[in-house]
Length: 277
Length: 226
Image 1 (spheres, chains in turn purple, orange):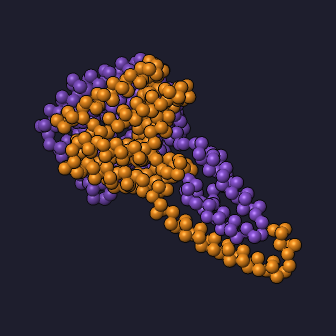
Image 2 (cartoon, chains in turn yellow, green; image 1 turned 45 degrees about the vertical axis):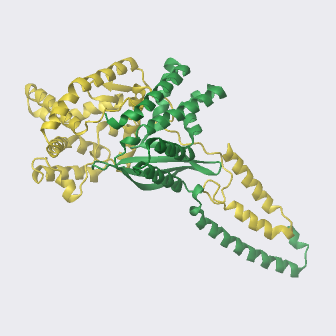
Image 3 (tube, chains in turn cyan, brown; image 1 turned 90 degrees about the vertical axis):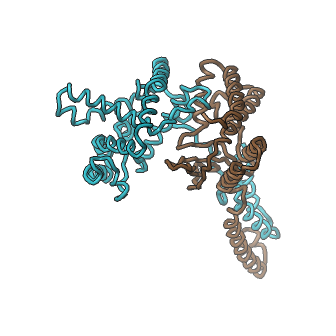
């Protein structure tokens, strides 16, 4: 590798500096300084010989393939999800989008976002981000009152309080739980064993489930899931438009896209840069 | 400095003064070089990326230029900024080691063609997006990431586009691009790994060839939209 060559040459030059005769000291010192401070050495001034650096490996798994023991199931589920989207979800979302203008649909999205404050608040708390948990409470209060039942995100627009997205899968990841095998869920799409556990945990934080009987909260939750889902899809109509245009292996592309995104979200939530929407 | 002890005091002092003066000269030269370094284009990764993006945008925005000429210009720009050898090697991961030199050359050529066809087919879909550059950060010695944001003309969230460059043979070249923090080479690495493990390397080459010609044929048709 050229990198090793450069480093070996620099140490030879440094050795040459020291061994020069008296008459050559000035020339040697000047030349050595010129060469040693040359920016050509990977941007480091006077780089001392160090082990050859290796490239930061692309991808969150250090370049290793993802654990996928459920692959036949996952593959079938991915195809099922794409078909359901093509024949059911997209047509409905498209029709819905032509009926309801965008600002109205964004307000519907804001409403559902507002209602789902409890998992966000709880998970920010679990990860000991107390200020962010407090911000979520403030956002809920402001948006429900000044934002007319959560339809308008005035907490962000007027007060600069951004939504700190968080979920139990990220909480588990924050405390060192590995993602586990890749898993494609029906309708919900790509996930992992850890993130699926997270989904169930967040789902259990719904107060409606504990305050009302099952024949109230099951239809209510189903309706919420369906409406919020269609609404979201209508705001992102070109989500799957060219999904297989550049893919040699669609399953692998979707899998890696999800795993990379999730790893990045974990990094962001630790840095405090994971915001909603 | 044993040599100095054999000389007379006069020469010793003269030499000492001379060395002090020389050290000062060295320090001044070093400082001058250090501050002048960013101006040397091939040694600043941000300059490489800025140059590529601005020239590419110039080509895309030129309504007078025919499509074929735009494609040639973009191909030339990409060829001088990207390191396709490194991208191909990285995209195959550990499979690279088990390939013969002939297979590696074939794959590199095919993968380069595939990437070219991918972005060239998008030329006519340029709708006036603009680019702002964000921070440059070092990933490891000799590896840098230059960030940019692509702003959509019709509003909506900007797309983060980061370029990863490697310093080799005296110049910075791009070896990976991340779109909204998703590395393209890592994505292809996962895809290619699955195809090689499941169906074999010849099938991967055939799939790349087929997809490449499919994309190349869609260039003329993409103007009609999807």
